[in-house]
Image (cartoon, rainbow over all chains, first blue to last red; front, top):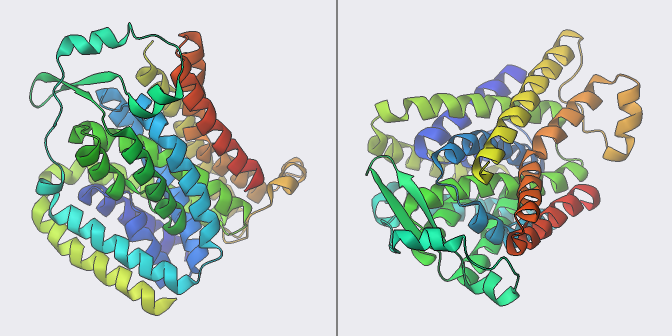
Length: 286
Length: 107
């Protein structure tokens, strides 16, 4: 059984990295399929999501694309959503969780296969000097400014060989959706990046690369809030979570290194079917 | 040092240590004939079990160490914003930290 958990962790991390998913989407149905109760599977999955996110964040932070400011602003409601979602998971029927998981799997698969259309190029191109002016902004605090205005930020795009300057807009809209992304994460033991990235990109106008990097950092904070709740409810077995977390982290590293050599569009289509089948099987198992 | 770099270095040390300790604790439980499927020890009973050298308790502690890594990055962001007098970021980080800590202790 322990070796099976290692294999499951490695596979979830490996294929998650290949497909641009956190691993929770693959891990949860697999754990339920081998006989774990759904709440234990969610608790374990959320621990694994923390592991993948923090390992991924190390890489993304180095690129300078992670927008810590935006992440923390959105994180206020995402974390609240994650905590409330985790509590709700213990009071709703297991079958309802399975149906919800299937619905999220459908959306994830759609976003994964239509990635080219979901992830649009940067929509805001503020002038570069604005990023420098941002440092001169008053360090004072006002709730209005906190909710409505975000400073200009920028990152160096290695591929395009240019600075990409942007300013997040419609922050209140982003905050509302972030709450629900956090809630889904807490309810289902997934990262929530599949919801967060398109929202940051399409609603808030954050360039795709910055949105992916920022979401990756956020997922770790969101998942750790949920993990504490599951931990305190006694549904996380430390030994099982440890094996799976290590497996997922190693698998994700391997997947990230091989992703460029794999036929990504074909893989996405194949796994879209696999993920939907696994999510569908969850409904019949619980 | 920039916040990005500060958080990155913290994560490298923190996560590297936690992962290594997790691996060691799994191996200890495996080779001492323990059961990795034992349920979690409640945080309130953790300290007593740690003092008794319970491998399961040590694994639980290491797992918590891994789980608080993201909270540690928020704490770093909070301290850095205080030092650089960016109140907006300090308040945001403080709220997030508050929610995380309350979920750890009250969850």
